[in-house]
Image 1 (spheres, rainbow, N blue to C red):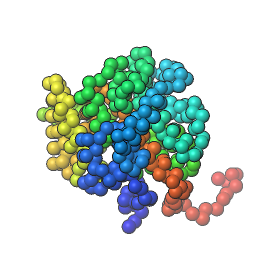
Image 2 (cartoon, one colour):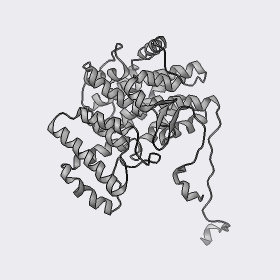
Image 3 (spheres, rainbow, N blue to C red):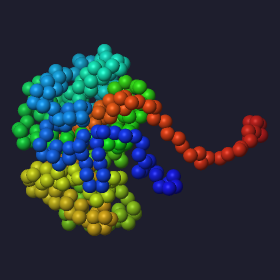
Image 4 (cartoon, rainbow, N blue to C red):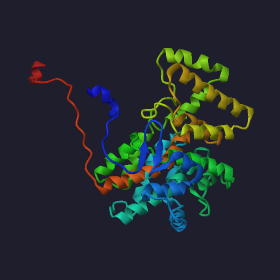
Length: 372
């Protein structure tokens, strides 16, 4: 094949991984289908699975949960840092900066031993949701809420966001979304994390690389742009009016198409059902109907299926989250996968250093500056 056939490394297999399997119709974590995990597992069980290559026993889950909850606090300096961040700054830029700062207060940040790496993974997994909630409260000029060590990661995130213990139904809905987002093989941000890990940089640097990549509108930022698009369409009847001129100009309709899933993202049916259950008011029901009409029209006109960002953006909106923090919620879920890949990279590490095919000028003769 010509190089152009693999633009963006499309279809190039660059490494072996035992973490996640995806193909055109299937997604599994460590051998378990995403449908089974989303229906039956807690987010903590999925994190344990990704990191340990097995679902935990009851005692293992209890011990793992205890370790996570012991890290449910932020250094005082990080809380103070959040309070001095410009409220208009994009939350992903703030999150990226705070994760980098968090490493400054970890005495084991540069320790590359396996026990130290495992402790850092637990610290990050426990603290990132707290940081995301704290960022959102700061943007709304609300006081910081200390974590509740009796709650799960999903429950605690919602508690730190609203200062209220969430009901079980709402907590399970956000937990389902976190499970769906927890891992997805060598997407752009995970690959960035592995490239950084391959240099033997510290864990915090690897996560910062991933978050910097995730922020892009063609990756994690797509869910925010998808809901903004949906909200700009007045009604289901306006879908054709919205997309016709845009398709004519070959504009991207956010939330559609996927590099791997040509016949539909297996996470979408789960999220679509979740969105339908969440849509209560007339406005929300109309928004959900608009989404399904847009899905039907894009399939009919372009044979493009919605991807996870299309319905996750709607789900997060219906859960009451502001669009600006959608990508941060994506980040706190996907950190489980990042940390699994970082650990796997270090198991048999080799510096990731691909080659480029030179396409520039050749054999030029240097001319003195007086003759240029």
